[in-house]
Image 1: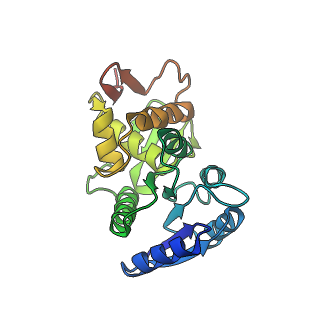
Image 2: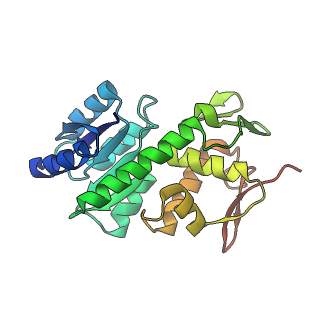
Length: 234
């Protein structure tokens, strides 16, 4: 039974989400502020976190940043649920490592579908998507799908779930160009946030973590006007 942590200071919203998700077979934990959210995240280690932005004390952006910077929680999918639906907030949430973003008011059915989709993608990446790829090596970069980890120069890299999924997808098809729309569809799903800047932001953060010189990338190339590709070995 997957564990879901819901972080929202509106009791009525929490109860609606609890009713919806428990009806789908999930176990729901709740926190009403940022500090309680982090404490529960570390204690429970949930399978997914639904996070409001406007919280007392630490806001949702700060909580998301803290989750992504801690090795205990940096692989937990985070779905932001907020009344703040403008592009700036959506992009900022995704820049900080959120995996999905839904605006209030929301459809309980859509929320349940998004939760299921994010959990399914997380499971596929942890157990393998059916492909027999055990390890991908390229220069000093090693990607281990079965362990859901990447290593550069012998040191494990701290990647968010979406960063790892992008890296694995590109590295599994060296030389193949993926458009931003294709990456949005493959990584975030058809019903996710349709902002192509989301892809650019994740690629930028990914390069900062794996590239010796992010301004002159060794691994992930930009194909101007199209998208990105993983460089083929010479």
